[in-house]
Length: 154
Image (cartoon, rainbow, N blue to C red):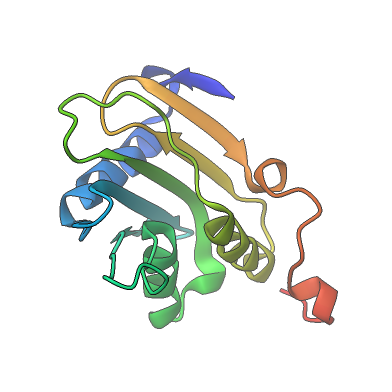
């Protein structure tokens, strides 16, 4: 659902600001498309990630998976409460198109959602401007395969 950043809570605005800030750390020399992601954990801690490309392309890491892996490395995978993602072309001074996680990232987020036992909202934003889209993961990835399909509960 599209909305304006000014309609978000201060906590949600801070999460988007953190995702936009993480974009500055993107290693995207091939696509020139910087993406930043920010996770809010249940205790309010914010972790970030940026995309990290590789010359072989297939080994590149998306910002969302980098951030989720950072949470997991700290033993906090089950504590992810909200996600924000922002990104756009590095060569465009004022990009205002809202992006959403790719399919692979949606699947990785599904794992975090199921392990945490809570529905995750994903705030999607452009690198600048007021436009924001709020999505539930279950809407972005309907009929998903997850831990429950393997008999593994959260």
